Image: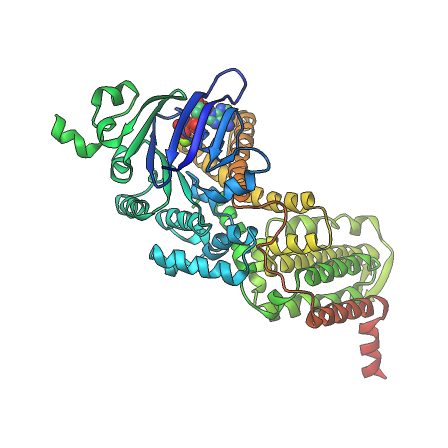
Length: 244
Length: 267
Ligand SMILES: Nc1ncnc2c1ncn2[C@@H]1O[C@H](COP(=O)(O)OP(=O)(O)O)[C@@H](O)[C@H]1O
Ligand SMILES: [Mg+2]
């Protein structure tokens, strides 16, 4: 299968002393949905930022056949879309529509082409009525969906999502999960919402202190109570009953 | 609701105002920028005793308010914090300048009073014109226009980010004051002993957020060029607007319009 993302012995540290990511190697194939799980501070967000070239460490990172370096950066960022943890930081234009055309226009699409994409994505997500709403006047759940739409409008091949279900009520959380579920792209989802990971990912990478502790099928890892608890996490709620 | 949260959402409202549609909104951003700069220069250049000439300059904001459909009350509401400051500038003049200028019945109007009022009007008019510029032009369009004038990308990006940074900072201030006041019930504002750590925290938090926000722009292909802001080319409409404004401002400045009008009637 074609490899979409590959890390080869990647290390990173914010302050030069304490390593946040340590000698990390893994790869993700096209079409996979991978859950990146780990306690707070395990390094999930850092790994995503490395993947986008927002941070640079030691080691090699590949996106498709492109090696992470300055020349390839624009191409890599066109390939990989990143849904930020805080949608307020993601949506900075006055309206949803303007936010959504921001990326496509920067990559050279005309206004008409960009608008066609916006309409297509909004219809696909059932959000057509959000198009001309002001970002500061939509609810948290709508904003999260709009943030996802903003990234989809760039037509990335890989989508990274940093804690997409945090701070959402159950209904909105369900909407986001269903949306993620339907996306055909390669997905990497960082979260400690293990129920969501179970619903959306076939494979799970478990991190602790910037190192991979386990990498395997979601079914196996998310049922391994001892492993999860040793890494400061709990079984998904929906599995807890059966194992009591 | 929290006062500062309010301030933040007001900033976002300015963005929203700028996204409305009107003949003024439709003008080229540079055209509005130049007419505003020219207006402010002309207003500021009026001699300090030329009160009647200066008053004529109020026509420009009035017309723009009318045509753009932006309520005047909104302008005063948004500017309520700075207006008193601007008005305070000339307060000392009446005490410094006793030259009698005018006799109204038994009251002598001194040069100090006239220059105070003129100074206040200059401040007020300049603020109104700037408000109208921001309320009818999006920050992105303005930066895009400046970029076309070959203003270095780093400057326009800085301008854009500063504008966004103010919003982010206000948001953080509101979150933090709320957290503080919850733990300091019955206390007004923030105790002076906490100012240092509060400011430090604020700086760190808003810098982190601004970094994320900038990251989000960069990830979507932003490179200092404002391709995404649609600005139509400078057209005849813009040239006309600029020419008419320019001519009107200069006439008001160099001809004594109130005097001319007066002599028309008095003969
Ligand atoms: N900007 C930063 N500067 C210094 N340290 C940071 C920064 N961001 C994160 N860290 C540290 O890096 C570690 C991993 O953080 P992060 O990748 O955000 O974890 P996660 O997303 O898994 O919660 C944490 O110990 C955190 O304190
Ligand atoms: Mg994180």
